[in-house]
Image (tube, rainbow, N blue to C red; front, side, top):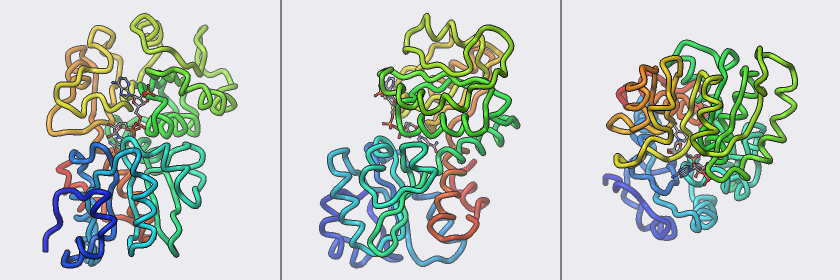
Length: 308
Ligand code: NAP
């Protein structure tokens, strides 16, 4: 029997019956809200197929108030692992049994591995982001002045940590709710004590999400990252308008979708280079696969499955 397009908490509660005739059995999945957009199933199923692993990966629409119960159900099922996507990554950290260094550092989990009914959390977004920037733009984070839009979210936290670990030249955190960046800012400070940039600009700052503040920063920024969900709906506006962008900017939109997001259209209009989140999806997914199966992922099979 084929898997349905997406499962719910009610399905997990009644899993023995719901999944009884599904072949190969579902033993991996992604929890999100929304989740319909996720290309992880087609990418991970291609990887499972390439290695002839007899199981499949499915989508689960799990709302924020359902995460604890959903993780509780999979704990007792024969699952190998789960990916957490928007908006579960930060809440996920408090709902697992053990977090490795990548997850506890980022205060966000995107990969859960099950072992003996225990949930082990990791974060592969951070390293996946770094690999994506290198493959899309042939440049390392250490050479870049980076602005993260949505630095208060799970993905924004992971990206900020990766920038700090790779000692990027400069890091500017931007969030609609600025207070959500203050703990992160304090923890990142020790990474930015050495002077690297010429001129009066600070190496690490958090700024409010308003046009004047963004404009003042953008002259001293190379890479702009959208880590908000803006762009997931085709009608979403760009998180920052084309008039603030310049040809020297590189724009990375974590959002991926069938068409160009408004942010990538704005980058094009401003003569700036841009890329969507598909390569990050690939690299974070390959790292998740390696955590679950303790082997190198079949990255070319995964890449073709998402037409990258
Ligand atoms: P999250 O934890 O819910 O964080 C969302 C962030 O976006 C928060 O900082 C939030 O700000 C901000 N935000 C939400 N709506 C906004 C709006 N209308 N205007 C301005 N800011 C807004 O979500 P997440 O898990 O980090 O995911 C964020 C996005 O990254 C999603 O689209 C996800 O699909 C994408 N992503 C892609 C990949 C990939 O592999 N390509 C990997 C990870 C994530 P407040 O703090 O003010 O609420």
